[in-house]
Length: 242
Length: 332
Image 1 (cartoon, rainbow over the protein chains, first blue to last red):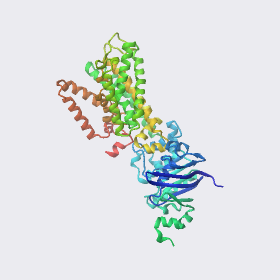
Image 2 (tube, each protein chain N blue to C red):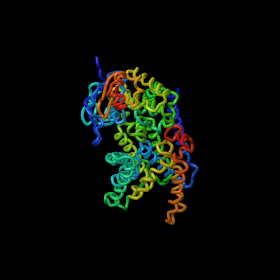
Image 3 (cartoon, each protein chain N blue to C red):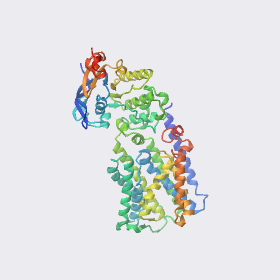
Image 4 (cartoon, rainbow over the protein chains, first blue to last red):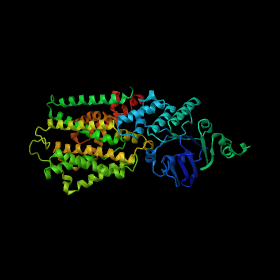
């Protein structure tokens, strides 16, 4: 039984004369880890921003549990249950790790004491337990990625969007990051992750949606997708297609 | 439990504030010199004013160069209500505070749609505009200003013959209450939201922070606090005119203690006022009489020296957290 938590319906988005997304349609199943992949310029980030509410699609709509969320804006999307991280880490650098995550927790609770308790729980979950009172700007790059995840989790999302969360990490760090993502999914949170390096994602994701030049090129299990001639052509060029 | 790092720090701050309050309450008793007492009164006033500015400019990061507007509104409102309608200033300052908060919302409505430097410029322009309007507005005596006549000693009317000592406690109460507001706000949801808005708007929105309303809330609180200070100033001096209540230099003087002391910190405005206001007043007293502006040169040089030596603000001298814990130390 398909049980889509997120539905992308014929979404198109242009920036000036550049078409970033053209008629993209797919569903995200509840509890899965979906990889949104494609070469640079495929329209991943644009679609990501539309889902997170930071952008409004020109045409089409995005539904969260059947409710239209496209065009509502980032604040409403977060309230309704979309959490996100940023590709270029955007921590609040004048605050400590705990304070950063508390901002996220305040999306759900009013009182500082409750926000602190929730934030601490999430921080420990994300493996930053020993760093709670450290200024955010002094974290290492992989720790900053974890902080982004922690902040997103503190808003209690149904769907967590991860933007190039594993890119640029060493294999060991990436491995640790993947364990965190699996643990997040085990909490019942659906995950959509954008990456342009496919190899990183394949062992982690349940399904992949491949974008190319703004359109959806392929969709399926990781094994299906990597064998798809269109995908190979898009990534490597015609001469690699047997 | 490590959760209590913030809680512990906040408790320490509260105790420190209480001790300081007691010391400041005793401070004028051994001082017989009326001029010195007056200096302390002004310092306390500016500590409160700058703490109020700090809520919008420091915590929320919206640099206002037009806070004299709210100060002037509070001063004029209280003075006019008292001299023409007999409303006691103990009520008048709160009416002025409400008007100041309202004015801050009116300024914020268009200006918060501008970002960064443009917001600061817009507040500057609005402030200048109102100064010109008031200079030509008959109802408030235009450029003549309003004199508040002394009738009889009264706490209700904030009128005192031995002017300085009771006013010491009035201004101390003002500074203490504003400090307490800042302390409460710093630990509340609003405080977190404002600092998030200051640091990164897009990230704040992704955490469901409604940016525009949060700026408006900061502006209203900040404008209200400033206006109450303006009302107290009018009662203290007994006179208000466009230049002393609405001038650009006043806007700068309100912002400067927070900037020099440490923007967005609890102790910064206090520390900044304690350094800047005496230096400013004493340099006027010793050097300013000739009208050659030497006092301003010295004042300017001091601020430049402080900015060079302590870009994080004076609070960093004490190893107190400047914004985030340990930042001052880390970046030194």
